[in-house]
Image (tube, rainbow, N blue to C red; front, top):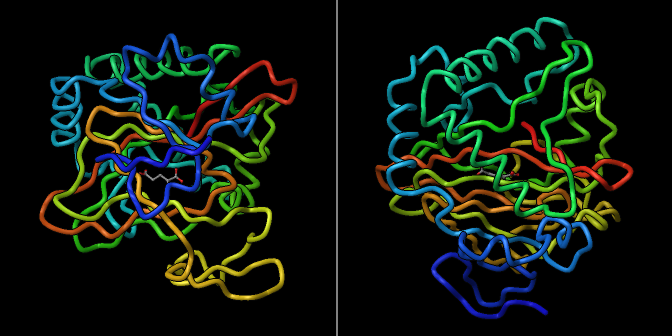
Length: 293
Ligand SMILES: O=C(O)CCC(=O)C(=O)O
């Protein structure tokens, strides 16, 4: 059954996918929500207030004090640690990924807000994916965990994140995925992110009524106007039905970002949008859930 009620976090003319809100205190009683996304009973859920205001503020001040050279610049802001997309097909790129990740690991040991983020995120996934073992995948060459997620800062007036879906990213990052040691079913990955700060305006996640089964291409990664369907026809996103999802600071959103096309709207006003996020998927034997970035 679809959720038809508009809220401050999920709104639009019609909420045509099943996105729900769950108070953090009720997470334990709600069954296996991540498994429900796999079974297509659910398309997404926002767990509200997983992190307290103090925890969110501590993570923001950690980021504010981080040396600029620890971040990786992106077209609309910056990230830390580096995302897997930097690993194309050279050993050098793998070293660069792990050198940023080792900084994150060091901060995890020495900065209580980052240690808390890593622990709480792991516990969150264990509660939200009850029927599964939960872990971070290992890279085959290094035999080390990959990143659990990345901080993403989007600055005002530099854009948002172009229309995309996770299955498209997989095709672009085949080499990275070939380096994962675990036996993960890579189709239809899920996306997750924790919100640390929302901008004054913009920055909402637009969810389109458009799925990977009929649309698998873009003219270029930067194109934000149209996608191309399986009959080679351009589909202009302004003509596609959509609704908005805007989790609040401290919330975690998990959704079916692999098959569902979506984008982050341009950031407006003066305040940057800050999230920490990554992806999730299941083992081929359907016993484990992995999360990474
Ligand atoms: O970090 C974000 O807020 C964007 C998430 C997203 O678009 C994705 O996971 O595919």
